[in-house]
Each structure stands twice: as structure tokens, then as C-alpha cells.
Image 1 (cartoon, rainbow, N blue to C red):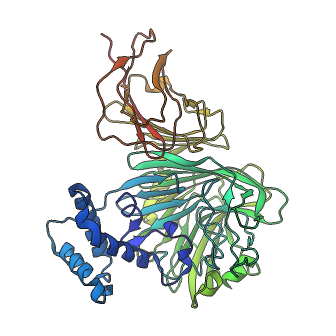
Image 2 (image 1 turned 90 degrees about the vertical axis):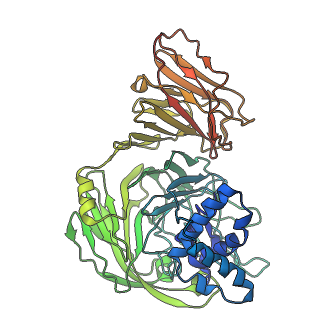
Image 3 (image 1 turned 180 degrees about the vertical axis):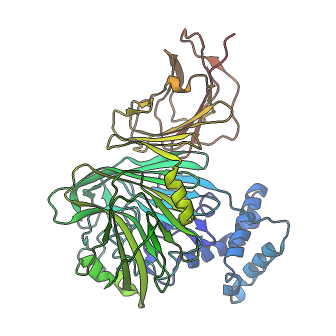
Length: 565
């Protein structure tokens, strides 16, 4: 269930996991979710008892949400599946439950962040993972689906019907792009145009986590790395920047820095939101508490791609917060920590044909609200900061803006860091090969780091190497800000880790790990044998108990100073 449970929301398969099939109207996230449920229902009884209990709880939750699933099971071949689904729904001993989770998938450049109220998904790309999947004339406008695209799954079921054929593909939420038609190249021997997908030349893509909270980052550039057998793709060779996401209970902090481009006549835009609205488009947008009147602009998707339609927005200056009313949900709030923030907003009535993005017929028209930051043409070292507040009312958004729970410690191309005051969590992305320092925390290498102070007087530290290239040490001195904490490192059976050691010098703890890798094994219990004191001469030495690696290259450390004898 590490895959299916985390990859589903209310019985729908997450769109960021569906590749080019998003361009097929009959292959919606609900259809893909139902297919997954059919498979799981047939094999669940073969699971271990623990896995079976977890799976049955998830299945019951999905079945309750998707009331049409059972009726969709027609034909003799589905009779046993239908019977099993009914049994699960009628079994009072099975409690429907899907627990909150934060899960990073470093070999996919994907992140799933599920809370009690919503699911947030993040789709990235790197030198390892493509920007999208374009094949056999399918998903032809999908260029930026992995370019830091953010998804919010809630009661609005935003992506299920007529989203991918009508959304502006050059303003996908979360992305920072130059809005240029990349195209799909010329047809190959198959008769289909297969181009438009590529890898970047960036390795720093990934993140780390503590419990159900996480931080992710993506170093991005418009310089493309071709795929074997495909024609070269030209996009924006001088575009570059750093993007980070800090994911907590009620908010997702989104930062961008070092955004630079050259030699192009188009602007660089960071899209905050591109929300499919009600059929009448009546969703109210408040900006700083004031109602907005924004004209609706009609266009079809091909005109948006070619920029032959009016793609301009209404400008709002000095924005502190905004709130967009949901379709069925409460809505989404937006908090802007930086003074003098200016945003652009466009209401669009967009017509799109499935034939334009894929191979199927069918046309529809949907209303959208686009919200973005315009960095202008050829910006140099531009930045942005905004906080997404899913499933929150306008009043709650205003209250949050007056007393935000998060503080941006730094937003630069060297370090991006956020502190959550209530959760006592600090998240940091060190972008430079030589590391950096912020808020008394230092790394000597590129790394993604999280620290959380606990009620028990300990501090948890998680560290990963998103580049997957570090063959030496990552040294993370923990400053005297955390003195008085107990050092506990959970056990590791990763054979690729050559050496682990803890040092104390001048009141600092330094954890060093050789061959920090993006793969590891989670152990449920700490190993307490073989405990050694760290010999440093410090009058209050630390004790190293054990070490744990988690999938994604995350090292967990808990710190507490040992009392004097």
C-alpha cells in the first residue's frame, strides 16, 4: 500500500502518476482509481494480516467516497469483485481510515502530502526524470506537468472531468516557466510526433521529511537534456532558478529564488493557481478582504498556447492575502509574506478539444481563475514567496495573515529556509555544493535538512542528499541553539554506508555519514547494543545510540545532552 494508498485520493488515482493517459477522456483519475481498486479487491486476501487490515480500511474509505463504483461493476467477470466490495462496505469490524502521511518518491521526483482535510501533490523533473510523457500524439501540451506542478485534492475533484483538455498548459499551478510553445517535433517512423519531453541537466531535486511533514526542492533550468532516439528540444536555454516547498498541516510554503533568463521576448511567470471554477464561474475572489470584479476572457486552448488570445491579467498590488471560493470545498487561501507583493489574476472561459491534446474526440468549455507572479522579460535573480492554505475560509485566511505561523529565514539561490513556529520545525534546502549556513544551522554540502524540537526536550534532525551524487561526507554541525539535547541515532543496515560517527567539539554535534545514499532501510526499532561514548574531552559528552536511514536518503537524528555524572 506504499504505492496505491498514497497514490489515491477518495478513490481517484493522482493525476501526477498517470503520465500521458491524462489526455484520454475515458481514463480519468476516477477511472484509473476504479481499475486499481478492482485489482486490490482481488488480491487483498493474500496480504499479511497487518497489510490486509490497513488495505481494507483504505478500500472501505474509497468505496464510501465513490458511491458509483459498485454499480460500475457489470458483467459476469466482475461478480466476485462486486461481492467482495459489498462485503467490505457491510463489515462493521472494518473501520474506514486513511492516515495522514508525507511521502517522497525520489526515483520519480514526486511528493504526496496527505492531511486530514486535503491531499497536496508535487510533480518535479530532473536529469533523472522527464518533464512529461508525450507519445503517439498523446499529451501534446504536457510540457510543464512535472515542472514543479502542484495539485490540491479536496471536495472539488478538480481534475476528474475536462481539466486536461481545457486548462492553460502554460500556466499550470506551481510552475515557473517561459510561456513558449515547445511543440512536439516532426513525426518519426511511426507517423506520430514524439518530441516535447526531455530531462533537465539539474541533479538537485528531492527533499527530506520528519513524520508527516516535509520539505522538497527543485533546481530548474530551461536547458534540456535530450532523450535517446528523440530529436533535440529547444525551450529556454538561459532560464534557471531554485524552487522549494515546505509542507505542514495547514499550509504549504512556496519559495522561488535566483530566477533568471536571457535573450527571450517573453516573460517568466510563476503560476500560483489555475483553478477550474463552477459552470457559471461565480466563485468569489477576495484580495485583502475586498471583492474583485475581473472580466472574463474567452479563448480556446490552442490560442493560449500560441498566445494569439488575450492572456493578460488584472494587476493587484500590495497583496497580503487572497481567498478563492471553492466549488464544493470551503476554498483556498493565499498568504503573501513579502511586502509589496504584486500578483496578476485572469478569469478565463476556455474551450478545449481532446483532439488537440490527444487522439480522442470531444470538446468542452470550462471557467478558470489564473493567478500568477509576472517576473517580466529576462529577469535577473527574481524571487517569489507565497503560502497555500487549502480548505480554509476567507475569515480564517485573514486571521492567518495577521498572525502567520511560518517565518521565511532565507530565500536565495544559496539557501531557502522556513521556520514553523507552532510545530517548532525548521526546513532548509542548501543549494550550493559547498553547503551553507542559516539560523545557526550549517551544512558543508548540498543537502535538504529538517529539524524539529519535541515536547520531550529532544530535537529530531533529518538529512538527505537530493543530488544522489555525494560520495563523501555530509557534516551537519548542530549549534549551541540545541545544546542540552539527547543524541539518539537509530540503527542502519544499509551496506552502502561505510561509516557513521558523531563528534562533539566546542559545544557542537557533528554527524558525518560516508556514502550518504538515496536508498536505505527503515527499521521499526532502535538498536541499543554497542553504545559508545563520544571521546572528545567535552565536559558534557554525547552518546550515539543508533542510526536509521529512510527511503529517500533521509537520516534521522535525535539530540539530547547527557547529564553530568
